[in-house]
Amino acid sequence: GAIFVGNVNASALAKGQHSKSVLDAGWSTFRTMLRYKCDDAGVWFDEVDEAFSTQTCSCCASRTGPKGVAGLGIREWTCIHCETTHDRDRNAARNILAVGRDRLAGGIPALSAQAAVGHD
Ligand SMILES: [Zn+2]
Image (cartoon, rainbow, N blue to C red; front, side):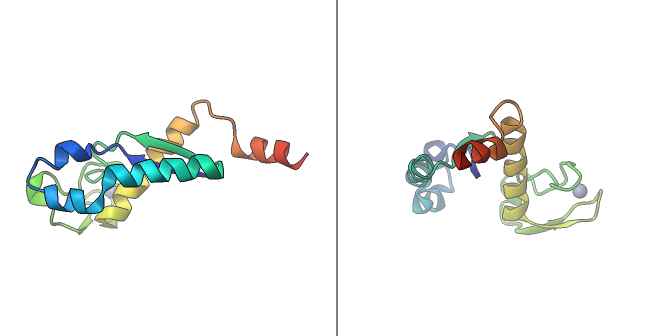
């Protein structure tokens, strides 16, 4: 019922040393198409602040993940506080989802209420 993406600035990243991977991924195009498809399907779509999403442990919220340019190659890490082992991308996705859900909880009508109206 809802898709959230990080607000990564693809054009700014493309000017840095990681430009090739950013441009290969076609982030801006992907987000534009995803938003269009969500609108068409009645799925909530939102971009959220992804700051610290890779550094923050999605279990205990400590910032114990890999940091900075030196940490970009670290794909898996273990939180020193709660000892949960994370896949870098899955952990970041969980954090982005949590931010999106928090934003939704702030005032968007509940999906169950919309579904109930739809069945009448
Ligand atoms: Zn943790």
